[in-house]
Length: 573
Image (cartoon, rainbow, N blue to C red; front, side, top):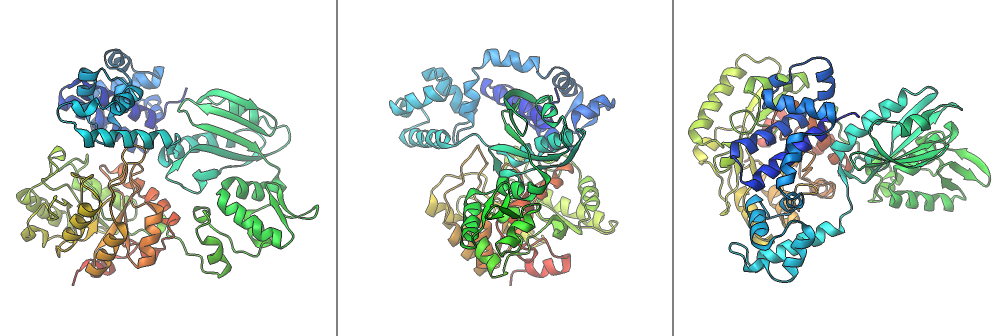
């Protein structure tokens, strides 16, 4: 069975969560979390690295012990140390820690005081009013727990786009290698680059007699075969993701790709146009009566109804059809438009690479500039920097810039926004930075009005440049903060500030709707990686995907500009 990096990272994260619930040594917990991040950021498969005899202990934050555990997972698909830990800690407690406001200490208290070991027991205790009776909880905490449980119950299981990308790439490559196969493409919400994916649709064209269906169900990541036929099969992978394979005729390839890409609302709207033209669109083509008039390519489908080609990311029935009719579709931003990255971390705080290593990685990506934005002192868990340490880093950046060619390191900082709206560092040092990336990490749930005012007060500081991960959400883990985003955006436009689209796959914050809102208001957005390693710079592409879903063009993106043009935009008058 193939073991993906994401699965190894998940095992290490799970191990860290169990250790945290047990109250283990914080350094041991951090070691597993750091290792999980390293594994998740790696551009190469650990399984391949092991088969090629590479020494995993030389990877950042791994060491001999964790390298051995990785080898065990790759070899057996399991980790004995984790199984032993699971015998000591009820598995349901980890689910509890994923609810907003329930850290390891509170989960231990719920388990020790009320015997709660899972979500169902937590729900019963909260409804009965038992949680408010515990020290350190109260009625408000109990109500927030009930609300979080309700949201969780309403959500279907969806997978992060980044996780599905890894799975889809492997599966597509596996199918492309089958004899007789011509084309293989992953469609559905994955192709539309939604931030989460419910299931995966794969389309194939092939020669008659190709064994593609047999190879599909025999793939080593398949856990259960739900159905197997000559033109369609469905499996569930070990990860829990359902995958459908459809074999389509070459003459219908474009129609099938269009149909199964969706969205349903977009497809219905286009079919309505077709009906008015006395045409019928389905997964087999475009028909006038019984005669097929289009279907080999997607562009034929759009041409048949009098529309220009609409990019998959826009197909949500949010105005793209009207824009297409008026020939006003946006020229969507692409990764090739990005000239630099405005948010990354080094080993000075919670990153894993040096200034030099981050600079080298940025140059390899063809960037013109890279902003070094280590954490400010408020975030103690990240070893945040005070004014004195920041001064030393600025001097180091000057020295490195003096010998760098083709890349400029920008002097910056991820500065915490305090509860009173002030910034975490003094203006005396902030004025010497090229930009600031300002963020809320503490007090995410203080309420809509207070949170909105907090952000706007911070923007009043003339050294505020970009609002980082504006809502603080973590997809499938933590809901977005309640913020009046329209007011925040209006304040940013008035003050010459900007908002970030954080490209971390579990954040993608701003979401696509807020990206569109920013565009409509004339507010430029910085698409940044928030990388904590050299390899992590590569995740910026997920931010580009999100920006495209939000109709962003290169003109709307702050860091799609050369440094001289960007510098003028960053200078608040």
